[in-house]
Image (cartoon, rainbow, N blue to C red; front, side, top):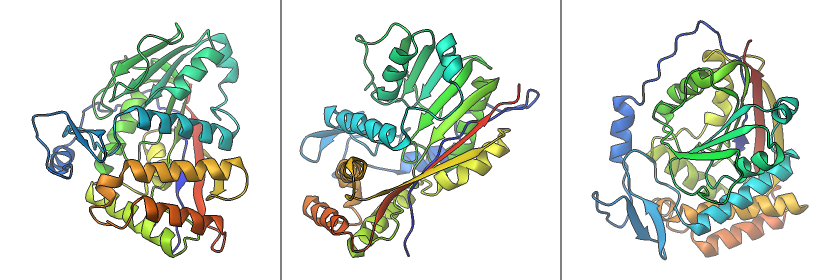
Length: 326
């Protein structure tokens, strides 16, 4: 059965009198996080473990710790940002251009190495940009004056007052939050978003390759095995519309883009390279259930895509956005 990965962006209105709890996580989430473990034997007293050719992985119980934390991963995320920018022909779809020029408060939630945050801060010097991430991969010294960063775990209450931001941007947390944590995460974002503000979310339905050939099906199976074993929600991208509506957001819209894998123009090539590099970064975990998924297998899979026999599509990309009622 062929399936398709999704990216989603959500922007939405909040009810002024809505009462939303800002509790952190449920006991079920805590249990799920503490039950996940890194392969090859790790020490619970250490926050990091070096494995897979010297790559550094987080060993904390309060984050999924699937991606390495090193320069190679930061480079991949920068390239991923450029790929998404090319695919969507810009950095955002929310109708906030005029407001950004005039000056507003913007939050980039789970900013990573801050590719999006830094570009936006340079493009809109009158606006103030706050970047949050659980890692310290963002720049500390060389950055625009209107750009600030804080280390923050997304399962905790945000360090901002209610109704603080006119625009909140978030993307690619499908492997960063447990299935049980999404609703409370969304609720905490709604609390700090001003009525009349915009929330934009971009997500991918990880492990859903459309028109997958024989090797592509193995990749799909490996991705789904990984997410299910970690308590992650592989379908969160397709569920976010309903979840945002439940949180009080309105005017939700969708934009979808499909990208052929390793075919066509520059976008297809960039999308394939990012897809390959994601699986290389996740290799220590993916190979626990699918040991055949090594560099040689991925190279052969890339060739399968390039031959275009099955017309494999890497992403169905969706944007959801809606304005908060003023």
